[in-house]
Image 1: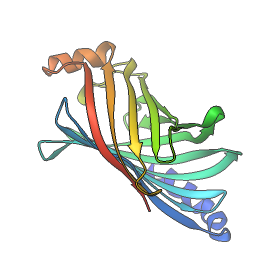
Image 2 (image 1 turned 30 degrees about the horizontal axis):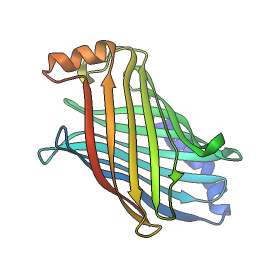
Image 3 (image 1 turned 180 degrees about the horizontal axis):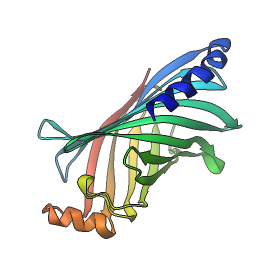
Length: 225
């Protein structure tokens, strides 16, 4: 799997080098969640041109000062449709007994009505298949106030008890955040997020002594450079 990813990167390198290149880092969410006292991060970085790009994505949760779960993705991205890119690469996820490597194939871009879409298919080194899709939209209330509805859906095709995931629709999150763009590059926000696990995934959570459904107030910052 790692050799396949390296081959994709090498095959695309000449195209990337031929383009005018630029990059940015965006922290989409650095937030505190009141219900669980968790700190969440969701960060992306991009470097490349208009057609060929490299993406780095990281997200995870910290609880009581230690990382509860985390993942990192390294992706090659190529322009596909006018507002969408195809992405291929690897994901490294932290699990209880070590790290789990998965191949990634996905799309990212702007759908009609200005919905930002990020959807990916994951195939783990153990052969487990899963899908995750996220959608969000910015609604401009004033020149500085922006309301952002956001939804995320996770689907697994296999039971993976070691990471607490059951087959079928495993998780759904729906959130609403209101941010104040102090500058174009920095915006504090407040919001609310509802999260629900389903099926066998919910059963795994109950066995661990936790609630599969949670509604939490959030507060955080969004920035890029």
